[in-house]
Image (cartoon, rainbow, N blue to C red; front, side, top):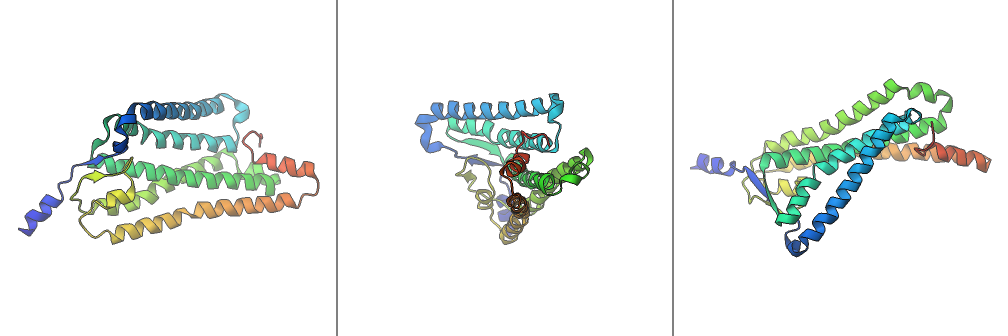
Length: 249
């Protein structure tokens, strides 16, 4: 009897995302609004990537990492918005449980990658201002590629470790997620087993992913300290301009 119960509990194959179910009368307006936002954001990011690839004077570390940030934005938006558009029109959507878990993984991993890339970009600014004589050596193309690969790899590994624990849980329903996409905590609520370990792992992963944030604060703190020690206003303005993507570092 107990085995049959467990077998029935583990047969969740789909989930229902409610999305904007209570705003069904405004579905068409929301659809075109979200579609416009998606297309503008997608086009601007792709345009940035194309411009950097075609313009040799933009082949700098800052623009290199901006291209990777644009790739993250394209992937992040494309993993949510097409489904969100369908939710708006249909007042909810039914998807396979496996697809829901994969969406959670991709969204979480890309957000983590973005945090790492922002930390790397702050490090690039730190080197440009605080270590200008060694900047070209410390940020050559090979170093930039390694930092980018480490950011992507680290982001997907961080979230993947939590995902392994999550998928080992048993899910028994109620198959309904009152959310726009498959987020972590709404999905955990569908589990019939103890999720303490999963939640602790998620908390530990979130805490570790804060390290890029603290590194970013540290880098910009050093940058600000260095700029404030410059006596002339022209020198300060020039130092601040180094942190801008428009500056050809």
